[in-house]
Image (cartoon, rainbow, N blue to C red; front, side, top):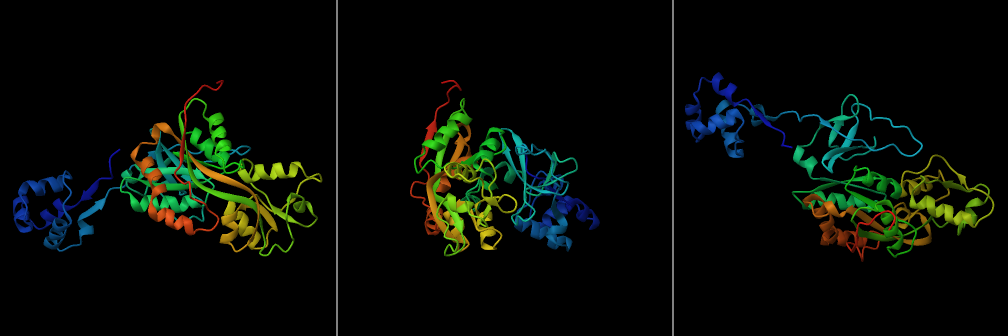
Length: 375
């Protein structure tokens, strides 16, 4: 895929002044052949030459050169979530775009997202109009997961590399693995409540990708537990406390590590289900936001989310959050640059200052060899 072409109006301006190509070349200090190449689009002038041309014509550089509109792309959209119908994004929706496995993948951005989009959805939903150059789309690493730390990592990838950038797609662990299996992302983030050992995550990857060679790379370790109001005024200590009358609990999406932890904790507690308050939360930070604003009394999320909102936290389990990557793409320039950023001193220094994260083994990798589903 080639970069967006540069359109120029040098020929029209030259003819308006009744200058030959040779005469124009003499005025700006280049040959007639250079003027021919510029007018035909075979050569892009240097900044100095563009300024000289603009001065000769008495116009601004932007009046001489502009990018032609990027071609529309046919894209693949994420599979629908379980128990939900597939609804294509509306025309005009903003999407993140990356090239995964030889095809373009597009992910709708939430309406409140403030980051720049890669493309705009066209009529029909399966085609988009890029608002970035094609090279930027080609080098975009799509990473799905629920760790807010991924936003920081993605930002640093874009800052520190000329051949890679990254976009975080917020998603639960199970959803992230589904997107990876569907060829919609390059990397999936995964955390299961199996302690600080990698065993639970590794076994989940083995089951999900039995015939593929996969890499499991640690991003961070954290604690997951109950997010409660500051100073824990309701004295919530265990799952049984969530069943008390009047205690409002933030629910989590099925397939999240938090929802699975909920289920295990409540299995030992007779007395039914908690009073889930409102719609399910969209992630760890959303749980903390709802408790902070008084919409709920408690919810399950990671410690860093509680600390970010100045809330109380009751630890329940320690976990590791790992990145899952097909080994076949781990050495490609964009993905390898993404993984290299885990060892970036700036990223490590900042992550060490973020409360609730332990990046002491960040970057440690395990390789899962391909095997058949029955082995």
